Length: 195
Ligand SMILES: [Zn+2]
Image (cartoon, rainbow, N blue to C red; front, side, top):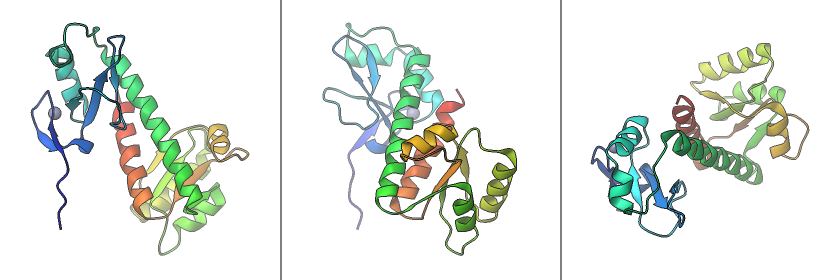
């Protein structure tokens, strides 16, 4: 049974798709264009695909001003990408905390490494940017055998702080809806980070 989700079109390439697949932007009262990552801010929204080509094209075509009107301040791609990166980091932190609450989080290199060797391994893995090289290689290669992608994000201290603990090199989430969501946000983060 397919539930119909609201559809929107990308201002750059005109592709029509479910609005949650797209990025939403709104105009703040001061005339600045802001990323509405959770799609909850009031007011008229402008949508683009989640890729740089469409974002660049929307800026180039002056789409923001066309949609939001003459009070719109000039849009800087670097700023939008910065906002987007921040929004993704908040979202990723939120999902990691939700997974912990749900009892689906595994933290620490030994625990994660053990879990990755099990028949039903965790499917989302976040490694600290300053994880020791030998541990990174061990986790990477074990995860690869299970066809799991590992993302490097946060340093050990931040990852630990997030969980109210001492530093942590790696966290992983057991398979399920949260892990699927986290992987999709991590993939988006990688796309934005490249810019
Ligand atoms: Zn597009």
